[in-house]
Length: 171
Image (tube, rainbow, N blue to C red; front, side, top):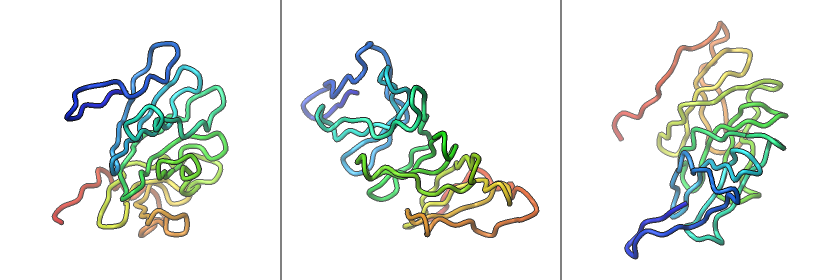
């Protein structure tokens, strides 16, 4: 992980003892960044950095001897929302404040399966996204960043809503 600032370009941290691996899906929030990285030991996991070596650490290890593959990281105020795989819940929405204790499953939308949330889109103080609860098909969801504030909007019980490619228009 490298940083470029007024003082030049420098390496922040190289957390892979085997010498390979590149940070992916870097997402800024505040003065910090989260990203997916494979340190050669834990697989593709969520990492955090404040731009210093001591402030760079792994936040997840949901799959022992495998990859949790965090994806879709999107800034959400002072947090980041993303999708990630774990063997208990499958692909579900997760949220982090950049700390180990503050990195949690947001909601198990599809119990026993993958809701595979996508298209995270911030509108005001809410995050909209698409997910499949296993009952109503792929639907539009909204969250305020809490499990109880994560709900389906206009659930279509007859199948997929066919909503895709969310975008914000106007302010």
